[in-house]
Image (cartoon, rainbow, N blue to C red; front, side, top):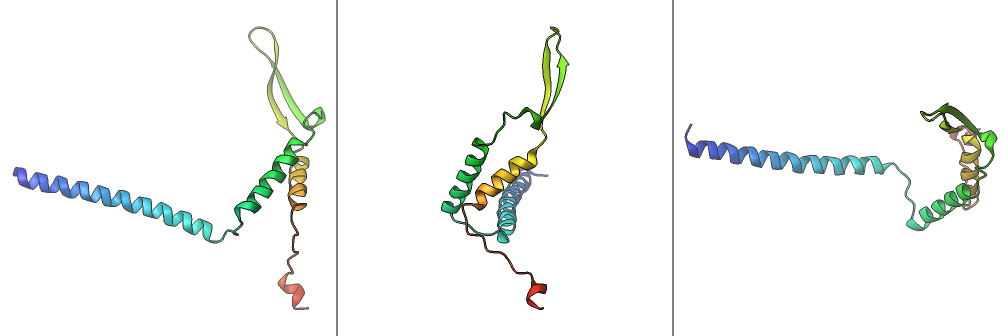
Length: 119
């Protein structure tokens, strides 16, 4: 193969790699757009209200209640007792506190099911 032919093939390969890279970026953008298509739209102000409500609920939650934790203890190499793992077992209460606090921030419409409207 002569030098001109090799350079032409190399240029073609480079061009195709650039095109593939461009198409992959476009594909990722379109996948994100498709993923977001069915999501409800909210304003930045509404998102700030939700964030503040979550932060308030978490900051005011009683994490000091030791009955909510499952703690596994072990001995380390120095013979000291250490907490191997600490698991929050009552996550329902934390989630409920967050949901309740978020719900307090909004006037929530109750959706009517289709079968109820046909009665």
